[in-house]
Length: 372
Image (cartoon, rainbow, N blue to C red):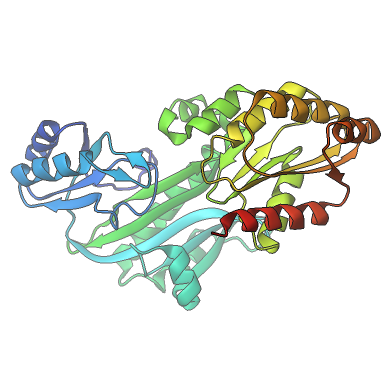
């Protein structure tokens, strides 16, 4: 995709076996780099990127990488690319600055590293330029002048300008939220090339980007996320210990923030949506309980279209049909609140009215289960 937008990339070929990797390296005619193809960062640190001096070494490296699991993801294919003779590495990213309401270019001469770490330790090594927005966007000449401060000579500056313009067009035309090249490599032969890249597309725009939607891979989603999508739930796995079942994305985000503020860690984002359907609660609880790291569950409902009595029915059905082995804290307020509370009370369950009260209680429950 970068290549289609005029951005130079290293030659390469996908391989699913050591034999295919050997053939791919032979086609490149020299040293090669073998890269694990998994949808996560940190591949190099995990040993998933190897330099091979010849096709035989490329085959050996591929065999070893294809036997790896990186951050829980099995490596099923590798990319064999030409080895670049790199003189300098840059970071370049086009993304949205929501505060400025603008599309911005982020540039750093500390390429090849985790940009978040650079931002935290050495923020002065990161520069930012507005590419498009309400005002003060860089024109072509202004952009070249701005880039000249980071690149060693006029040739690299001209190439960088073309790369950034290509990134910006890709960002806008494919409805991206991030186009990142890291590292953007300056070779000893004077070429500027994308040595690795990450592109994030806006899911909400996929209906008008069928070519982008066609790129989707099943491994992009966990089994829980796939099951949730089939059940009509919005779900994202996280690494915490407190399961969240909430109605409405804004309330779900606020709930996760509240849990973090109280010293807990949310295990997921889960929005049961605006419909009033007890089945959704049952499906959501089934998905949450698959997480073996779960210490407690928070159900936070503000009833509007979603009726509290239907949520209560779903909770009671889940208790009856599922083995719930962690504490469940409920906050219930809004449409048909009294009916819902009465149903829960009759079953020996209580529901809080205040969100902070429910959050503090669920964090306390989770901590108790962590104690030996």
